[in-house]
Image (cartoon, rainbow, N blue to C red; front, side):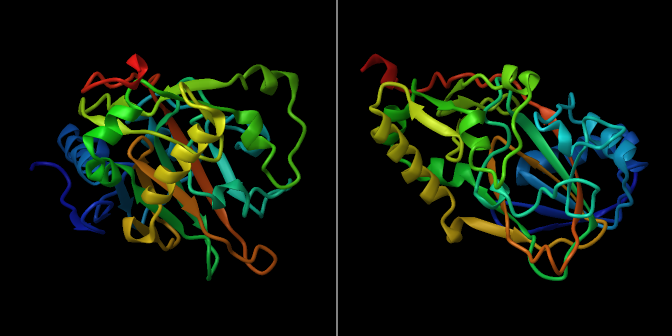
Amino acid sequence: MAGAKFTTRPVSPDIGCEITGLDVTRDLADPEVFAEVKDLLGKHHMLVFKGQKMDAEKMIAFTERFGELDIHILRQFTHKDHATVSIISNMEDRKANVNDVSLNWHTDLAYRKRPSAFVTLYADVVPEEGADTRFAAVQRVYKDMSEEEKNHLRGRRATYSFLHLHSKRPDPDPLTPEQLAESADVHHPLLRRHPDTGEEILYLNLPDCIGVSGLEKEEGLQTVRNLYERITDPANTIGHKWTVGDLVIWDNRTLMHSATYFDDKKYKRRMLRTVVRGEEPMPSTLGASAAAE
């Protein structure tokens, strides 16, 4: 390869690859290097770039290489000069957004018509204890499912509600009329096609789910809970302990993630976050469909 040389270290058999010796602000301009990095992301679902020096503008430039940036509905937590960059922190001159609903396992922005494709986080200030990020491999569970289970899910859509999720935030701010206008419920297939690989993938999110098509409310929610518990079983997860300068990107369609608690009275934390707007989830066409039941 004519471009930058870097080293890789798989984090686990199913999730993650650590990359050292690469400067994302410079080296990804080489098409060959970027193509190799994109292949690694597809293979490992999550990449950790060590020793980076990022600010909001550099985060935007990095993330735009993977697609169109999205803006979070909670604008009060975005960078004052860059709306596509969120600040996860207890160091800003505003209410902190740490130790909140992010402590629950989730996939980002399932409540949007076009949920996030990729998510990036950069560690600017990290506490000595806690505030790790955990990841769970959704497709590992999919591969263990029987065809009967898959056929029961094919054609069914889960309904996701931002209003339901927002109500779970500690001391939630009232939503503005503009935010309410963005908050209509959405309906996404439980088994969808991955746009890059074409493979069938399991896609669900419990915190903002309020039902499943074709099932009574409690049956639908229990179906999602059962899958959620299998996905987030500790045997199926890894944890990333942050150090300053870590830049992490992951495929939001194939991984779930969660934060861990830290003592926000004792420690400070400041992270930069950007997301790539994904596609509208399309249902899988494989096998029999529960929609025909």
